[in-house]
Amino acid sequence: MSAFTPTEEQQVVIDILLNSQRLKVVAGAGAGKTETLKQCATRLASKKVLYTAFNRDIVKAGSGKFPKNTNCFTSHKLAYDAVAKPYVNRLNESGRMPWRVKAEVLGITEGVKITRSQFLGAGTLAGLVSEGVENFCRGSEAEIDWHHLPKIDGLHKSQNYQLRTMLLPYAKRYWEDLRRTDAQGGGRMPFTPNHFRKIWQLGEPILPYDVVLLDEAQDTAEVFMDVVRRQSAQTVLIGDTAQSVNEWAGATNAIEHFNAPELRLTRSFRFGVEVAEEGNKWLSLLRTDMRITGTGHSRVGDVPNPTAVLTRTNGEAVRQLMLAQDAGLRVGLAGGKARTEITQLCRAADDLKRGKGTWVKALMAFTYWDELQQYAEDEARDLLPFVRMVDTCGTDTIRSALKNLVTVDRADRVISTAHVSKGLEFRRVKIGEDFTEPVDEHGSPIDPTTQDIKLAYVAVTRAMQELELGGLAWINDRLPGRARGNPVLPTSDSAGR
Image 1: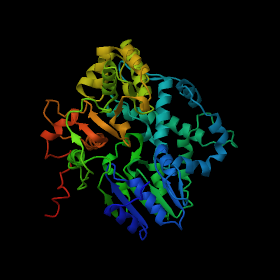
Image 2: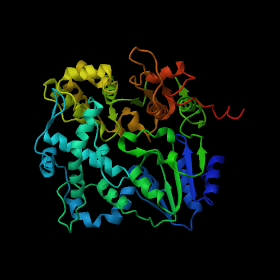
Image 3: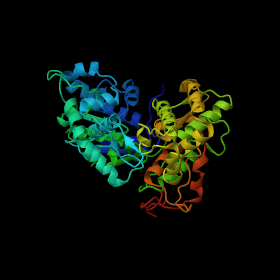
Image 4: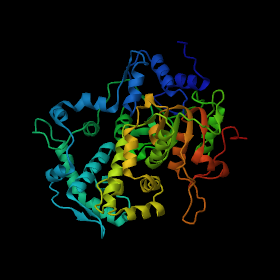
């Protein structure tokens, strides 16, 4: 293996770290940030170093690369070692608990009618309470409150508020159950790593390290960032703020809010200058003068045989995997939860067609399929591809396609939502057709939201050799422009002229 030769930017990070108590590094897609952190740890050989990230796979991959002075742990591992012992029996015994049983434990004895046609049963209410507790456990607040309870799509703001405040006492009861140790007789609710991590954070722990290196910092849950900010250790946050697309899962853009000098890594080793140019189109719509450069060349244009198709929604992912299967290809679906989510949506569609309502949270506000059809057409473009696939093919055909999937490592073509693709890379990428141009109710183009821009940036920067813009090609007709409320800033080449 050849010796690592840092770029000028990487060398600056390594050198400045030696004399900096806190540092944050904004690293573009494929810019070698983990290798840079490894070199930082090597230069700090006399110190005890922690390398950590939100994702277990990222930490596992790093564990074989870092020097002996470095421990590679997730936040869950750190929390387990510190506080899990009093709960070990609960952890060993915890398993899935049906919502109806949770309702019995919490004392939810009856459901509520939320619209003229929609009724939420006791079990469904318990599921919402459970989700609210999970939201609380991903944050840094000391007390659970009504805003931790989830909103239900399709309900008015006032209806959501009434429902969430009604469920708050049950959420507090749920949390008190979780805090009961084995010595206290334990509780009845399933006890998970997210729960003992929250208990650990509330205890304001001090980590036994001289240096903390936090990778993929843009995706760090606030519950862990609260711990990191309390440390007196030398601390480095590194990540790509333009890839902070997991706020829906409790992640915060920790880099943006971390008070420290900022450095940058702008050269990507993943793709050539052509793909870098596509990424920069989306960066130009954000409140940043960050721009990336490529290494060598790649191609942007038609990709007739992509190794991956990236979509915005599960509905378009289903369409793409069925098209690929019809073409005789072995197809894999990226992401462990994607198949389960699509299966749940199929079950929800069947229930709505029978007028039974559904327990699937995204569709809870509906009793009948035609209600969802109208809502998807008028207000929810992310649901529209799935609704159209069900209307065109039926749920049995979709389930059959899921049964014929192969593992990603055996696939001729990988289908993935852009959210799931973050952290992955593929030789030849095609963007799905559901990345449609945003328009208003009259069909006139409007500015994309910040989250739309970031998701598009993630999608185009997965390509290594070839990229077909597909549903994102509309960007070429829109530049220069502005993201909603965010002015386009000059590129790094023109700044200061």
